[in-house]
Length: 452
Ligand SMILES: *Cc1c(COP(=O)(O)O)cnc(C)c1O
Image (cartoon, rainbow, N blue to C red; front, side):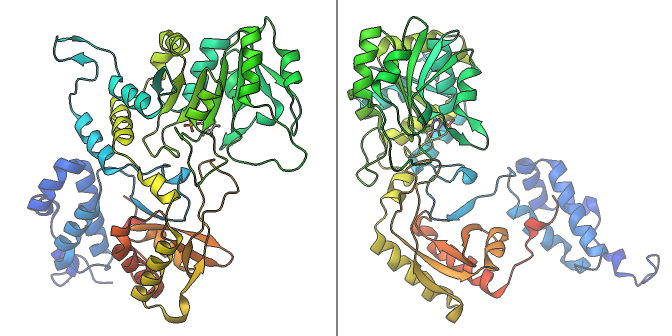
C-alpha cells in the first residue's frame, strides 16, 4: 500500500468535502434531500475513492450520478411484472393519472373543511362522498375512513360494542399477515356470536342466535380463499328478512371495493348488489379493485351512516385530505389502472410479450409462455386471468429487483416470469432495457445496494 502522506498517493487527489458540497448539483439536491443525505453521499464517493474503487477525478461525476438517482423518499418505484393486480407488497392498486394530479392539488392548503362562498367551516370529504354516491346510487349515504379494517372497527363499535355480532363460522377469516377479523371485532368490545359450521350455515342458525343481545348481523366475503364441496351459506336477501323481524342492522364486509358488478369476475361481490339485496351497511377497501388510494368505504342507509359519523371513533379513523382527493378523482375519471389490468386482453398481452422477447434478444434464454394473472390482495381467489409471460433464467429475478428501475417478476418453477399485465405499455421499452441488463448480468451491483 502507498504511504498516504506521499506526494504520489492518489488519495491526496480526492476532492475535499467543501468543494463537493459547493457543486451546483449538490446545493440543488440539498433542497430536495436535505444536507445530511447529501453529505452522506459525498462521504460514500470519497470512501470509494479511498478504497481504490473510484478514480479521484471521477468522484464529482459519481456524486452527481448518485444525487440524481437518489429520491426524497426511501420508497423505490417498482415495475410490477408479477401479473398480480392488487399486490399488497407493492402498495396494492396503482393510482390513475387523475388521482395523482388530485394528490398534488391536495398537498398544499385546500378547502377540505371550508366553504369558500361563506367563509365558514364545511364538512370534510363532501367531494368524495358525492362521487361515491354518484357511482353507487343504491347507497343513501357514504362515509370514507382510513382503510377497510378501520371501517369494520368503526361499524362494529358504533353498532355492537358491549353486544353481540352474529357471524357464520365460515366467515371468520384472516385477512393477511396475522390480522384476523374475529380479533378485530372483539377488540371493539363486541362479543362474537358464531353460528353454523365452517362449511355450512343455515338461516335457522342465525335465527336461533339473534335476540336482545344482538348488535349487528355481519356477513363477510371470504375474499382470499374458497370452500368447495358440501357447502351452504345464507344470502343477504334471506338475512334481510331476519334483520327486519328482529330490528337489527345487517352489515356486509365485501373487501374488494367493487361498486358495481365486474363481468370478468362474476363471483366477486359488489356494493350495489349487496345494498339492493338488503344490506344496511356495506364495507369495502378503496385500494383493491376500485383502484384508488388506501381508504375504507362505508356505504348504506342514511341513519346508519349518521350513527357511524357521530361516533367519537370516527375522528380517530378519518381519511386524510390526500386520500379523499385521490378517491374522488379515481371515481370521477373512469377506469382506474387496476380495473384495466384485470380486464386486459390476452391477445394484446401476447403481442406485447412477443415484442418484448424480440427486443431483449435473449436467444434460447427466453421464451414466451402462457401465464395466468391474479387479482391478488385477497380478491377473487382461484380466479385465473388469462395472459402471457416472458420466461427467463431464475438468476435474473434478483438482478431485476435490484436494477434501475426495480422490476418485480414472479419466481416460479425454476424460472423468472415477466408478466406485462400490470406494466403500463408506455414502460415496455424501459422494461426491455432492464431485462437485457439482467440477462447479461450488467448493472448487477447497482448503487442501491450500497448503504445510504
Ligand atoms: C381486505 C379486506 C379487509 C381489510 O381492508 P383493508 O383496507 O386492508 O384494511 C377487510 N375485510 C375483507 C373481507 C377484506 O377483503
